[in-house]
Image (tube, rainbow, N blue to C red; front, side):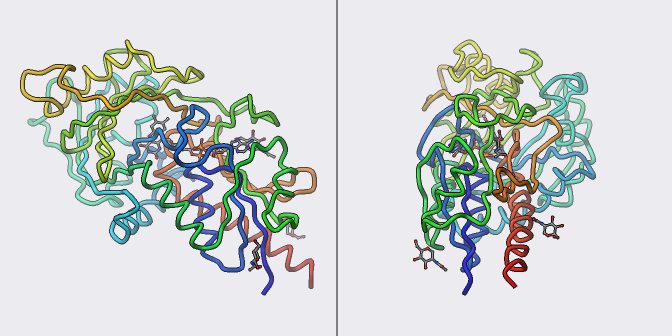
Length: 364
Ligand SMILES: Cc1cc2nc3c(=O)[nH]c(=O)nc-3n(C[C@H](O)[C@H](O)[C@H](O)COP(=O)(O)OP(=O)(O)OC[C@H]3O[C@@H](n4cnc5c(N)ncnc54)[C@H](O)[C@@H]3O)c2cc1C
Ligand SMILES: *[C@@H]1O[C@H](CO)[C@@H](O)[C@H](O)[C@H]1NC(C)=O
Ligand SMILES: *[C@@H]1O[C@H](CO)[C@@H](O)[C@H](O)[C@H]1NC(C)=O
Ligand SMILES: *[C@@H]1O[C@H](CO)[C@@H](O)[C@H](O)[C@H]1NC(C)=O
């Protein structure tokens, strides 16, 4: 049986989901190479910091929308079939204020918060809140059932699935894609390299895609459990300060967010921002703490900062040839890397198949 030697560069949710799908074909012999692996917490590694939940934001008719649409059934199936993957279903409430429309957070959530979104037929239990039940200042609200992913369980679960299917994981900091091609565990040259390097901070060397930039996300992880998830279009604390609450599966704690600070690379938590996050989360969701309590009622596990890997012009899923090496890119997933993970990975795998198809044609 002919073997396809594949190197996947990057072990965030994009690289791991792509490797997971590729590893299901026994003809593929896969090496996953990465500087950071699940278990690491580093500002250069976005995936562990994500909530993560499924809150679709792709504009109607875009690739982004198609990737998010394609991801829901996969996440639903994993949630139902593999409780050990660390994902659970969770009710969620979405609040919209029209005055947030022009802000960084309002723009990010514009599809999510609109009253008649495309995803109403994708997620279960979608329901619009009647106008006479809206809290003061809220222009419209809706509820649906989503998922919350405990990234500390899910990312290692993906590693485990890949390993079970024969993939080999190796630590490496790659300077050039050609180095990746020669780092396959068989010692043979890789037929194709899949580039899932996310924001790939400048310190990593190599070519930085000029279109990449961060949207800094600060979070507070607490032991309190308020029940349903909450997301809002914005806050009165600043145009790039976000508001969301989500409780992770399997004892993962509750994530209080957040911020959406474009072009800000600061990996250190800002304690003033942390205070504002905690205060506004309690205000919108008083059940986070006991009656009458303020932020002293929160039991803090940790403060964190992650950088969402945004790309001007959108996610790059594309075939390429770099120094004679066939490359398929899958990077630039901003704040939606989990909720679009399977859609993006399906598209990437189909390009990998194109490349491999040509390889076998060339041998005929
Ligand atoms: C606070 C916060 C909350 C979020 N919430 C959500 C959410 O609720 N839902 C959602 O869908 N998304 C969410 N996101 C977005 C999501 O986290 C990202 O879109 C996703 O993690 C990107 O994954 P990735 O695999 O592309 O990149 P990363 O996770 O950053 O992984 C990059 C990988 O490439 C490796 N790498 C890079 N360069 C090299 C090199 N030269 N050599 C070797 N290895 C290299 C790194 O070591 C790492 O393994 C959130 C993000 C943040 C920051
Ligand atoms: C994959 O690589 C390993 C070497 O690590 C080798 O033993 C195995 O035969 C290869 N698999 C296939 C299908 O060629
Ligand atoms: C891989 O992706 C990164 C972005 O994360 C980009 O900077 C780099 O140029 C890509 N590598 C190649 C060989 O195209
Ligand atoms: C495959 O071969 C065709 C025909 O030669 C070419 O047009 C196409 O770009 C090739 N695809 C890849 C991924 O190399």
